[in-house]
Image (cartoon, rainbow, N blue to C red; front, side):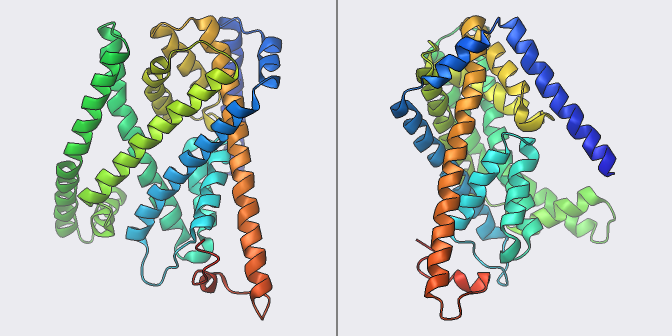
Length: 345
């Protein structure tokens, strides 16, 4: 099994590298010129990118905490905000080198190990949270497709996107109610079923996750997160002085989110860049501009994620060291640390 996993990993990396090479050749990317642009990025632009990345991580953490509040039992501990933010920021960094389906799930499962039921809270909670990103991206794919088909511009895309998102938010409650009824029906008829799918559906119905207000909150946070990501990539265009309209970035982003969610390459390497360059070209951005920008954006976003994660880990370590110094015994069990004011700062 280990050999199979290693083989899959090698193949996924090879696919990512091959797609990057393909993008470099098709887009006629001057690698030296791109590296030169990255070396001369303005500090103020990168600082803005880091701040937006931090807010992006915060929103992701808030979504997971909302889900965790529903999933955890009375015997589980509440992770401090600094701890969950740190774990989330580390998961975002891992998402640059691991498949996006694995990175955050692994980080949160390990991060909640000391707080009870790590697998359920870390794995199920994260997968449920990330499903809303795919849902919102799927709705916005429709807006982008309509805009491209009608050869519209920024106004048309904004109108279509707003309509799609509003419809999604309005239908969130009824959709959750329908799923909850289906889950309850299957749970009643198949109490002793051996079907894994039916058991999961039954457990989902009793988990508390199928709540209309929770679904609307998660969907709204995903919308805000999507806007923040657009602002982030907008900063990367300023960083290398690439002339790409912001609405082109917004219209292309849904395709990238969906493709990366289905990608098997590490962090969507190659697939994300190729999808972004292709989508931008469809909306009118020359491939000669879109291709090098997509590579530069990957580097800049990864760097900003590393800065945020480094800050979060440092802050967490400082708080832990301060708590340990104040403790008369020198060490305190993780569950007891949750009640201290320092940890909730």
